[in-house]
Length: 298
DNA sequence: CTTACGGCCTGGGTGC
DNA sequence: TGCACCCAGGCCGTAA
Image 1 (cartoon, protein in one colour):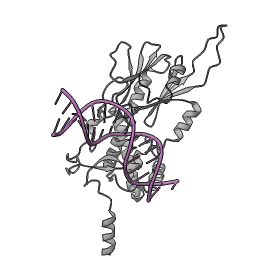
Image 2 (cartoon, chains in turn red, cyan, green):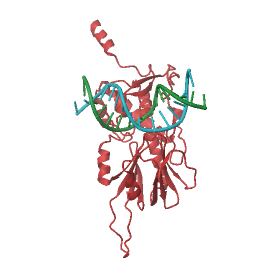
Image 3 (cartoon, protein in one colour):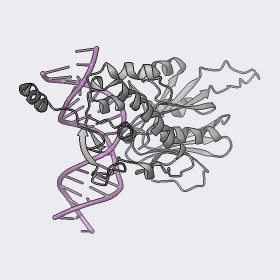
Image 4 (cartoon, helix red, strand yellow):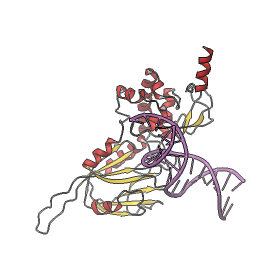
């Protein structure tokens, strides 16, 4: 499941070989996850890859327009710069291969490059997404995304969470609040910050928001260092697994002992997602029932 | 406006 | 061996 650390690892891998390459040819298989497949086959050939960046969980491949040589020897006015935006969904893989390499099942896109390598997109479930946008389209696209978790200041973090009545887990997963955090790193961050996933964000103490801000950045940084978490299908741009799944403290560790207190890790649905937590280290929010009881008592 | 929730996309894994 | 079912993450529509 590619989240920020996995996507960052893929991007760093792509950055090692793609910039400067020209796209020769685009071949597509199934295209139902591509906004405008025809635009890819028509506009990408001849483009030069300028750079690869990450926007939350999205990969952005910046493209300089194809140069057209007129019959009279002059060079046509170049078109506008384009950006190929790719979301890996749950099972998407973006890898650089040699054309002769065996093609993995469910490989739907082949981008032939001028150094005789091939960028391939493989996606078993096709929950991924691919679209081509202009420079202005890229700006509009970015407007829908929240803050970058590795760059957000404590002040901004407090502002985005402290005023909200939603559950903290839902906000961590909301890409318009923070870009790039998914289910794994939300659970791991909450555990490290000792905050229960169902807590109302606005009810958290300033100290807890500070802890969460720190935990999110620490977990993401540690995961990038280990090249991401390989749970099911994730591989980097060279096709290698990550290692951070070995360091998960709560995610997919239901009924295993907490690494801090030995209590059994529990799983519950919060914000429609499986949420893993330690019931002792991450105390549950007070329920309505418990609150009214308390009021009666008082 | 904010929040909650259900449904949808697809196919691998599981259990009978 | 086959088959029904569950589940994953993101997104969108709807309801309160």
